[in-house]
Structures are given as structure tokens and as C-alpha cells.
Length: 241
Image 1 (cartoon, helix red, strand yellow):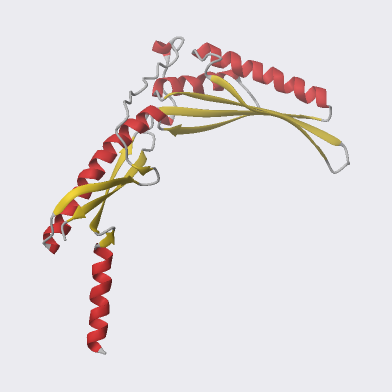
Image 2 (tube, rainbow, N blue to C red):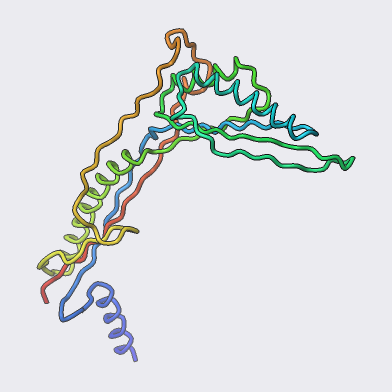
């Protein structure tokens, strides 16, 4: 009984390292790489809501405040290519007196190259505009071009890591590699030849009177949070019998 248990254990260990397909022996090595990247894009979501018991009045009040907001954005240097409408909605509800109350809302989105001076100018201009029913949400992200360039480096590092792991396994088991049968990239499947990727440089809008800007927001003191990117690679080697 003890001999049978040992035989089964050895068979299990052997099968986790080697697999036989069409009389070929294989060894699978995995590698990974991580890096933290500073986002290069800033995203602002500007939401304006106006309420009134008359629908037309709610829409009129909304349009007036949106006009003032857009004028402020124009002063900083933002153009219509950067200012995008994300949502526009008109809804109604009943209050305790069973009277209808209308809510008109408009959501604008700004996406531009992350620059502290421009962000500070945006906050300063909006504050001076005296807008009453404006909510501001700030976020950051890594641009597609920066992410692709970073992931290309991560893949290269992950391949080196997988090769190192394969060499260590080969030494421990005293086996020899014949060739690389397959290289698999996590999520994306089989890894092909690298693409020609160029990073896009974002030209920020020209800030009107930028030499007169005095910093009064946290962006003058703190950095934005980094984003962690990761890649995993699996290399399948054919080994000698």
C-alpha cells in the first residue's frame, strides 16, 4: 500500500512538469513583470443641475449656467475639441404637495494632458465665475500610447523572467531544451511580433495669463497616484526525452 502511494505521488509530480503531445515532451515556464506609471491624462467631469416647477425655466437656467461655464473654459484656452458633452437629461418628480418638479442636467467632460498649471488655472477660473450648481469630479488615466509602450517593455521583462525560471527548472531536473514551441501572453493569447508604437505627446491649451497664476490647490503640493501595470508570459519549451 505504501509503495502504491509513493508511485502515485511520483506520477503526479512528473505529470505537473511534463506533458506528452504527439510524442513531444514539454516544460512550461511562467514569468511576470510589474511597474507603476504616472498617468499622463487628466479627466474632469463637470455636472450642472437646475430645478424648477416649470420645465422651460429649468432648461433656461441650465443653459445660462452652462454658457457661463463654457465661457470660463474658453478663457483658460480649452476648445470645443476638448469640451465634450457626456450627458444631457431632463427629468421630473413630485414633491410632498404633489406638484411636479423638473430637473435639467448637463454633464461636460474635459480630457487633456496632465499639467499642474493648467489644472490650477481651471479651478481658479471656475471659482471666480461664481457658478452655483456645479459639481466637479477629477480623475486621471494612462493614455493608450503610453500604456502600449509600457506594456511592450513589461512583456520583454516578463519573457526574461520566464526564461530564468525555465533555466532553473532545467538545472534542477537535469533536462535540456530543444526549442521554444509557444509563447503565450496573459489574456491576449499567442504572442506575435512587436508592433511599431509611438507615444503621443499631448499639447496642452495655452493658458491665458499663465504667468500671473498663483497656485492655491493641492496640485501644487502633491503628485497624482501612480497606476500599476502588469504583464504575464508563459513559454512552452520542447525538451529532450
